[in-house]
Length: 266
Image (cartoon, rainbow, N blue to C red; front, top):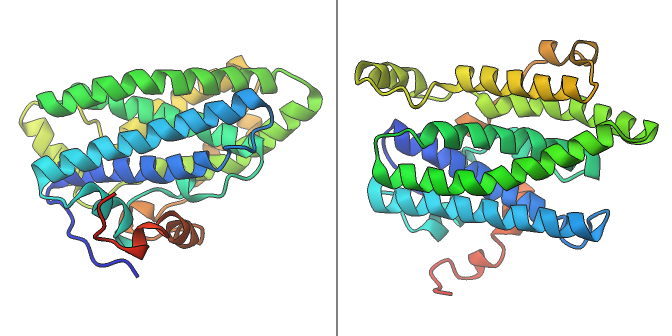
């Protein structure tokens, strides 16, 4: 069993840890497409996206160690119990079929793009630099996702049917990316009082993400109202440490080598 791991203190550290945990788990899930992609191009694409996401997680874990009192990045990533992980339910899901993973990729990376865009306005030069650099990489993720979403939604009758089914399956999980978290409301008041508007809060990020997503879907001929997306409830719990049944076995698999000797230097 993983050992209890000290949380870095403060709302900013908590927010960055959430982003890092999302990226770590999403990167691991996307890496599972290596060797399984429907075509070679997609095998390589998902592997590349996965590598970027794990690298993004590392960047934030390293910042948390240097500036916020967190432990070694490897310990933070691999040596926390399930209830100390702050990832959302969307990233925890198995890869499913290609339609599911593509829709998840599209929903998730557009949300990450919005987070990096807002974070690039923080009056902290180190974090601002990190966000600007990583935002540039996410641009390619969203381009890839947009290209394939458009192609399959505007493709054959079968591809469109499968994509629409995947959108309905993914949507409640995607809404859970914007779950409110402990300390968020007080932090928003504090930021507003100091004239810092770079972080708009989860509700505002969700609204911005959903409006942009709906515009894209409608451009690709999707009847958002008919799908019932506006009426779906989010799957919550991850930001509070309550996870889907899929996270525990994923952590067991992901940390198997690390747990052979948690203090080893590789």
